[in-house]
Image (cartoon, rainbow, N blue to C red; front, side):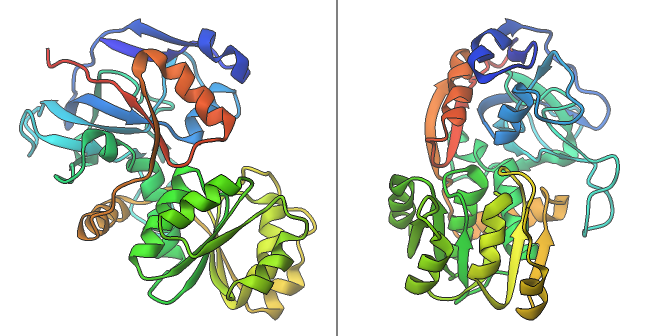
Length: 340
């Protein structure tokens, strides 16, 4: 079968040499596993960071990819039937505690092979029926980013109707899902971006407004023109998180799911206690979160925001698209393995 294999890590300019389309052995499901014929997969920043060597526990060669949708090729005695249309939960071994993942937790796509190949074996409990109204391409965009956003927005952020929500760095998968989720919950949503075009696209999708974070003292300007924010969903960290302390209203909640800008420096603790702020961390989500997310998506007929589509053979170009930072929504890869 065909697979996009990361042979070695390196700089983005070396991606076309480091990501190689090659033939590998088709996996055979073990006990309590099923074999899925992947039709579409989608990228996450995690994949890009791994390809650049910026992630813990990297081993190569490896097939990346945490997101995938396809059909059951071998149900292996599970409740599914061959031919069932499914999506994959990339959370492996979350554990029994809903509050946090256990020490054996991992994410599909490293250390074990991921979805950027024609067939994959995964635990049967990680398989869910694909929402009927979504195409394979649309469904493939959901798993990692959709789950991360769902937990950040609802399990941690408790977003509900009438909330004023700020989503930083609109454009990435988690941010765009957070936008769709918050709007579906009846919140008023605002965004930040370094691109005016991305802000305009977010507004077209339903956001009430936004501000370019390249604007000097953007947090002060934002407070002048927008309502007080009571929930912040942030994946940037760094200086952005510091400024969100100013933007967030008294008694508000800041949820952090990532730190693309690195460590938070010059953190003013007095703003936290004086404004009675709640700061919560969030990573991925439990199996219950994944099930609840799918129910929410189906009830609200949410269609993921997608960016460009690439054939698996052009997977390196898809990675370079993500490296450019120009995307808004999920970058999808057409795998379309044949049933054989």
